Length: 257
Image (cartoon, rainbow, N blue to C red; front, side, top):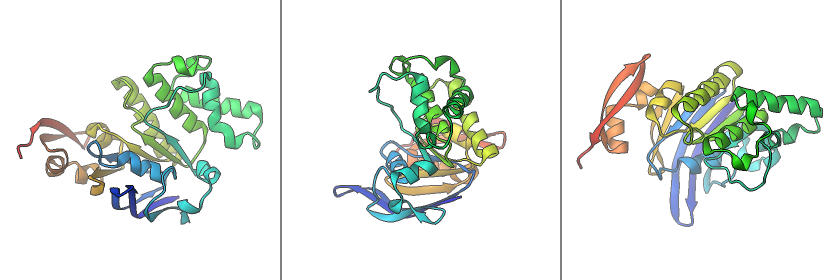
């Protein structure tokens, strides 16, 4: 399985948000998309899920053009976890995760689908929330439920848009270890937006940094997370050490212009 993003551009009216984006992701890679606020990260993820239509360029999955795929075909390949999940319907957590089994309902028995829901809940250690009302959960709990729903979908590609931003540090690590395990052991391709450079450094096979709608850096953590890149992209001076042979960034001060 291979994802290719070729010469991608996106604009709202006349305002270009993404400009000539090119990169490739192969099966089982865990890829982080970093960049300052407003760099175009969420727009890129939404384009990759087909929620937004590209102005120019193309996204391909195993040679198939995303623009020519139906929503159902995309959902068979890609599970998308948004930044914020609106509390609209008073669903139980179990039923919320069961929504991820929609495409499997006619292929597997009710019991099999329910077992997959329980498996997804257990992977995120939230099986105790199964009968709780989704609307009554904390922001962090809601985010874990939505990730569980994506896992229940059983796709080859998982897109996470700031999926750990509402979690405390313990649960951030818990989710990131799960995500890395899905990538390393089960060959699921994970593309995630993060703000924490050190979490990205530790858990990513590849890092893409967007700035002003363009790719400013693309490679492994050692290639991308340099003092020069952090200075030019984020406008801060930093000290970089190593933890487990991965760059660890200590921000020092805002760079004087």
